[in-house]
Length: 125
Image 1 (cartoon, rainbow, N blue to C red):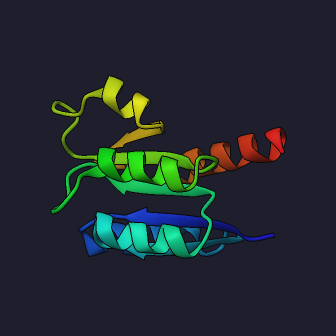
Image 2: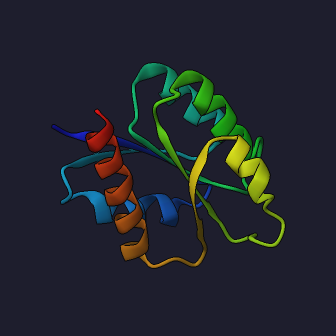
């Protein structure tokens, strides 16, 4: 059974890299360039994992996480950021973020976290 992942990042290269790296993992990756676009996709279909950038035009990753949590409370949320110093980890926790990954990141780190979160979902099902 395919798992669905939503990648929300204003950087096309980040979206593409994650999508390419997960292609052989029996995972379907959908991408969005903005938080608003992500909300449209979250209303249209269910995602097992949502990966969102922290700093984006419009609303930021914390707001994406909060809104996603209302629409799909069972989804796991991963936040990626190049701004670790300004990210409020307590606020991220309250928004439902499961993991935080710092940019630049190794794609293997992203794959490992996704794999761990999907395993947790299988175990709790």
